[in-house]
Amino acid sequence: MKILLVDDHVIIRDGIKLLLKSDPSLEFAGEAGNGKEAVTLCNELHPDIIVMDIDMPVMNGIDAVKEIRKTNKDVKIIILSMYENESYLRDCIAAEINGYLFKLESMDTLLQAIHSVSSGMEVFSPGVIRIISKHLNRKSAAETLNIKTDILLSEREKEVVVQIAAGKSNKQIADDLLLSIFTVKNHRKNIMHKLGFKKVTELIRYAIKMGYVN
Image (cartoon, rainbow, N blue to C red; front, side, top):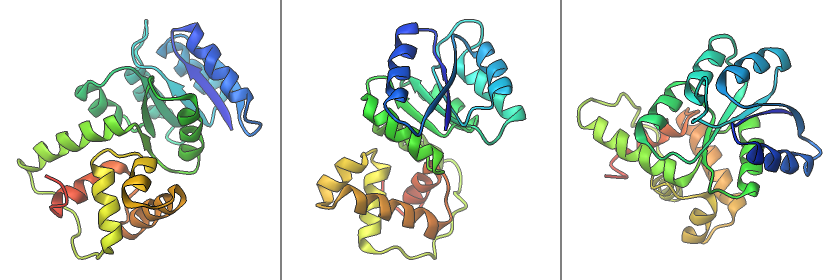
């Protein structure tokens, strides 16, 4: 997998480059210090995954994602930012990102996220999911959510859905439900497949519609 790094802080890019070198399945494709450079390099290098900051000079990360999506719907994009601003999160999700991690997360978490989005999953920091859940819950009071309610989940699957909507990580869910992380990942995968969802936001909407969260 070819990875493009986009951050205006050289020290952060250098740290992530060291991380990529520790995994033989990953290839460092290039780096950019602002969103405009990212758009150009994406067209030139054709990376599989872009790890991108939001707050950058010339062009910010959100605008860069929007520009990239005009010509490239396939590249996976992970936002790596310090911001917990709800409007930023909404804009990023609307721009069709594949993940949003806070910079306080560990390097191992970022490495796992890269592999997860490569396999087709979405990856969000637990705090991001909590913010999204609150936003969707408020929004649901003003509109009817068009979600199928005739698909039955097992009691264990419902428990996992509640935990995900609450912003719990796979490890936290495993600890709370006394399961292995592998089992939690399988439950998550099966739930998304059974409901026909591809996005975490769809699962949160479902949890709200079904009354699993309030």
